[in-house]
Length: 450
Ligand code: ADP
Ligand code: ASP
Ligand code: MG
Image 1 (cartoon, helix red, strand yellow):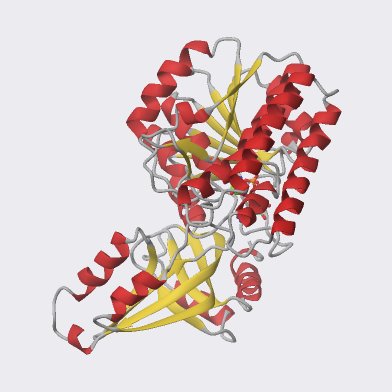
Image 2: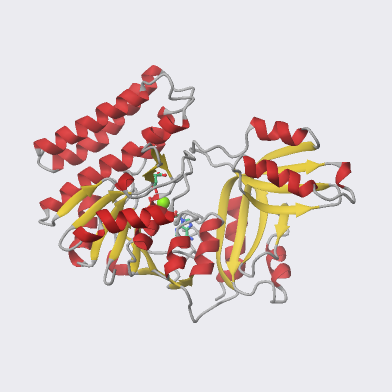
């Protein structure tokens, strides 16, 4: 749809009434924003995840429910307490309490997704009301009617065709004169059960909706003024990047730049939708534009850091001169839907890294996988590792890249050094405790002199 902008507001952007009011101003100033996708208020999804964990006590559960209620009510009270919003919120809180007390919760990935969906359901309810009080014709729309997924709870895969059909049927005809406020992160499967796209998934939701409605632009509003040369929390020297290509931004997201969910750029790339990333606190400061092609392609663009990596080494003397060993290892991982990031091989072993994020109900490595691998090999698992990725252009063709990176890092232990699969990245593992220093040193070496 021409002239349509889909805007996503992240957790800190909708954290409280004042933050929501700043987002409302962005929408008032840009009439092309017709679809708004919100995250849960900052911190709420972590609390919801905690409710689903086996070791949560009764007292802690009640505390968490009370904390969530307080976050929501702090906003309702600033809204002048419209009775119907209060009622709608009470219904959601009652439903949440029911699921949180269900005996089957700990063993059910489906109920875990249902619990996690309440954050976005509540924030969209309240944000739509904030907009209406600013005289915007806003409706709170349940995205589960549109964003259809498989039933892989915790990390559901969208059904692109069905999502498009539903968006064309239920959203497109009503867009004239209405702002749809909807939930990021959640969808529903064929049975109508609630699913989630994985932590940080609201960016991906917004991109999928933008694709389904053929929007011109996707705006990602967050707490930083665009995408920086590295996470600004890691070094003060980090600086914003004005323009990035889809390929560069996708590599950054894949390798841990939390500012974008790893899959966000996939729908944008399919339809060449321009993506803007900026701060809802400082919208006038501009941000980063991501396009299919950009003129400036520097060899070094950014550094990404992904924590919580597990290194698995699978060793078998039978691998020597034998075929099919790697297929067997990867077949097992695929059967458990475990995705692998870095891979290196020797004559009798293969080493690979797996993401094992904290605060996620979608577990990376589990006992059953290790058991199956151990049936034909010796398996070693190492934790407390972080993946560092240098992102840039033509890294495979430029001389001196290795020398420049390694000389900056001569005092650190680097593992799984990988370059070759992409011209856009150079990756390695390091001990998690060293990771912040490694990024700081590399940043100084690659960017401080420019
Ligand atoms: P939201 O809740 O809006 O989705 P996130 O916390 O998921 O926000 O993402 C924004 C955060 O991403 C920033 O506060 C910043 O610390 C982090 N980040 C990681 N890498 C980068 C980067 N290269 N540029 C900017 N921010 C980054
Ligand atoms: N609320 C979800 C999370 O915290 C999704 C998101 O914020 O993007 O993971
Ligand atoms: Mg995010």
